[in-house]
Length: 321
Image 1 (cartoon, rainbow, N blue to C red):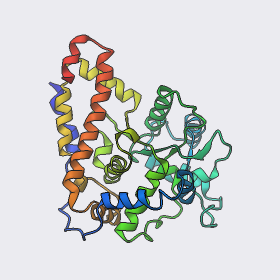
Image 2 (cartoon, rainbow, N blue to C red):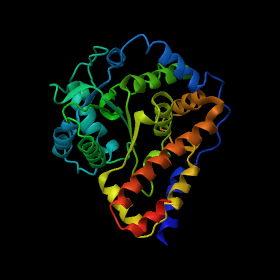
Image 3 (spheres, rainbow, N blue to C red):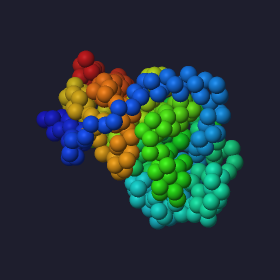
């Protein structure tokens, strides 16, 4: 049966090829930091103020569907190219001759080049994803989500690090050497925006579960926003393939069980300094955090599975029970 092989792919995505990390210096727990942020700075200022102070502007779903996709294709890239493939020629290039509104220096974020309310505005949602996700999967997922939620595509503004961080400042995180400051900034961004979308795909080997930043962002969303502030998205083509696999007899339980191997400390990250700060910020409660992240991922996959099985043959429903 193919389900065992596919679940094995998920497990391989979660497995670590990295050496065990040294014990991290003790720091304030994520929960203590969350309480301090939500009970301090964030409680004394509106979300709009917090977003503005962090520069949390995001492109609209309308812009992503039409202009961003066209920008990528005009640059000679296929719609299914990976995000990291277009970093230099599309994302950095667009802001290379623009003055950054935050530091007054030449070289701005992609989002800083956008104008008009229908294209850009204060972010309403934060997207957590992997740079190895394709542009097509990201845009299609957001467009499908917006349509299903009956949101105005010109008012649904999404913060994506690739378009909203200033990539002309490659050492932008070097100033944040204290793990506590690092955690505060990550939490303030998510708390200020208030809604997180986590993109998982492909269904049989989601890139999300193998990335340290994605799992950390998921943890922050669970801690600060609760389940109501977090949605698990899957590219529509992957949702359909997932549904077909389940209706053909692939065991949902086998797929969900594979998520038990997801570990924050085993996930990949491009920056050793980011890894140090992330693991320090979660402290000694790492195993509890792994459990809560796995629980939320399983719930998200199960919700998608139920939707597709409910629309398919009745005999497939037993797979979800």
